[in-house]
Length: 398
Image (cartoon, rainbow, N blue to C red):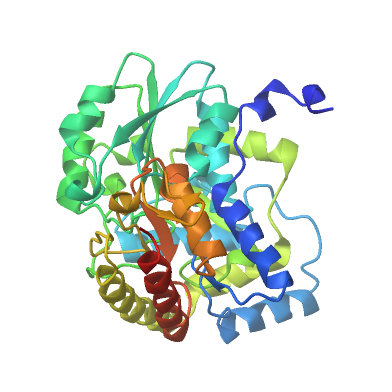
C-alpha cells in the first residue's frame, strides 16, 4: 500500500536520530542495559518555578484555543528577551510561537521555498533541515565543513554555492550535531556575502543559544542590514529543559510572520495554552537555572572530550556549544569483529549499540559519514560507563 502515499512524503527519509533511539529502546525492553548517547534533549527536569506557572495556568482555566501566533503576553516576553539578551529590537507583530522550534523552522521553509528553489545548508547539519526543504519542493545544497575547519563554512564557500536559484541559507549556531559556534566576526563575513544577493533569506536556528562555553551569543541578525533578511528561530526546549512542552518561536520581518501565521492557522493553530504560560515564566523568571544547567553541560563536555580522545581512532575537536561531540572515526572503517565489518558511520554506530551497548548516531545522517554524533546530555557516570564500553568494543576491531 506504500504506493498510495503522497509523492511529497516519499521524498522524505526517516529520522536517523529517532531510529537509533528506537533501537536502543528495543534492546532495553529485552533487558539489555544501554547507555544512550543518541538523544538530543537535556536530562534535567523543568525548573520548579516554570512548572508552578503551568499549575497556575491550569487553575486559571487557560484551557481554550490561543491566538494562532501565541498569547500577546508571551510574544511580549520574547520581545523583551531579544532586547535584553541579544540587543535586537522587535515588536510582538514580528513574533510567532509554534509547537516547538522544529515547527518554527518548517513553517518558514514551507512559507518561503518554492518548487525548484535552492536552500544552502552547511554540512554537517541537523537531520531535519534537508527533509523540510524537500517537503517544500526545494533542493538542498550542501556546503561541507569538516573537522579541520571546526565544522564551520567560510564566506568564500558560501559565495561559491550561491546560484540564481538560491532562496535561503539555514544556519545553526551553536550547532547540532557538531557543537560548533560561529563568532560574530565569522557571521559578519557570511552576512557580507548574503547582502550581495537581494533574494536570499537567512534562517538562523539559535535553539542552543544558552548552551555555549565561550561566554557570548552571536546572531547574524545583529549585522547591519541583516535583521530584515533574517528569521531567528529559538524556543524553550534546550535552555530550560522543556523539550516536551513544545514551544518555539520565530522573530522575523512582519511579512514573513504573517505568511507563517497564515500557514500555521490552517494546520495546527496556536500552540498549547498551558505551555505558553510556562514559556512566559521561563523568559521572565530568574535565569540562574539556565546558567546552572550550562555549567553542568560544560563539565560533561570537558569529561567526554577527554575520554573520547583516549579512544584509538577517534579524532575529537573541542565543541564550543550545544551538548554534542562529533568525533571523526573514519580510521576505524574497514576493520572487522567476527562476521561484522565496519564500512561507514552507520555500521559503527550499530556496532557500538549491539556490541558495546552504547547508543550514538552515524554521521552519515548529518551529512558527514566520517563522524558519529554523541550527546552528553546525560550524567557524568553514564558518560564514564559509555566510554569504558566503547573502549572495549573498539579494542575488538581488527
